[in-house]
Image (cartoon, rainbow, N blue to C red):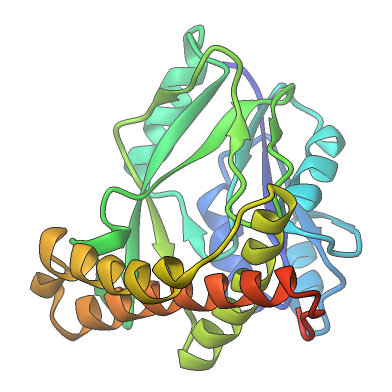
Length: 253
């Protein structure tokens, strides 16, 4: 079987890091790429036998692209600290690496959990990420929501990973503030414009689409909160892009 290096980026993930490492214990190497955590993340990771390397955080894609060459083996399994590899996915990954992979990277679906509930519908349903790939691949240079570039296109694994989205409401809002700032800066770099349509219509349509058309309503209160959060994200990102275009410097990102 081809050998595999697991990479787990981290910053103050003491609540998650042990379970994340346990879920990739089948990997031949586990690297925790830490952004100088101030909690017990590093000591907990080392106690679990992971190799910890540290670098100042720039943005997610930059951190991951720096980490990939530090890995020893040919194939990379990248896992965020709030994600888990279950037994079915573990077995599928091992079987795939026991034969000759036909692709350089693979999409993996995500089963998202929010407020203790599995999200079945809405904007988080059908979520997928490329997390298993050859070490020659790199993330696109975007500050937020960057994906792995796989020459020749990526394949898809059948079994999903598990994703525990937000620790609490404060974490959810902090993440929205940080990601909307990074997203606005990405759009500014790509010379995107913003108008009344983006500020008024797009957030409203995003809510309708996710809550009614994609059936977020069937997830109860969780579906309503996530649909509203998604529309809020779209609105704030557009608002921040407008301010950047007007020459305002965004603070606190």
